[in-house]
Amino acid sequence: MKTVTSRLAATFTSVALLLGTAAHADPLVIATGEYAPMTGADLPNQGVVNGLVSRIAEEAGVEIEFEYMAWKRGLTLTRQGQKGAASYWNTLADQTGLIAVGPVSSGRIVFFYRKDKPLPEWTELSDLSGRTFGATLGYPYSEAFWAAGEEGTFKIQTAQSDLANFKKLLAGRIDGFVINELVGWDMLKNEFTAEEIASLTVTETAVTEADGFLQVSTEMEGGAEIAAKLQAAYDALKASGELDRVDGALRATAGIPAS
Image (cartoon, rainbow, N blue to C red; front, top):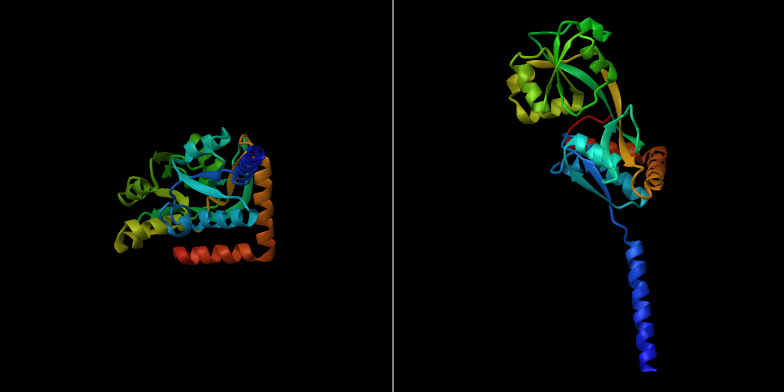
């Protein structure tokens, strides 16, 4: 009888362990990068966008963790299913291996320029012919922007970082720098003097107004189902007004205006 009892106890223990393992799935690993105030390992809530993604995941009942790396590498690994998702990317021309959830951000992409070297008022990118603009490797901006550069409408000089581009702009080595407006002002506030900041302004016309999305991998097991759960949670939060409230609170914490 003792042997039977021991065997039953061992069986129940094994079942309990298996159930515990099944209930405790690994967290969804989200590849992301440093892009203050939107994303960042050391920012409050890991940034405005990643804070919002965390709230959406909580609503969906999906455990997540962020892993910081180079932007392009993160997207590539997500397409391959080696990472569960990538936060965050503007609309992609190629959605292979990815499902977009959101949008989790919106913003104006503009040209920053020096006040003493003003850009002309423009409505079409062709109005900016002959200028030289800085761009940062790994960012999509807009197809029209890159096409204008390839066609020779204006020159595009790429740099490894936004900070390097701002330094080039202040030094007069480029005529303008294309970047998300809020991200640009946040970087200037944290990295440059008041005099340097005062010497710059932005174009009224936006290069593009871009929505950003959490890109979930379809190559990961259960990826499509997870994307559907996250989108359903997003939609519910949006419909209730909670999404806008959370976004406003995250932006206030980061010191930037509500959208």
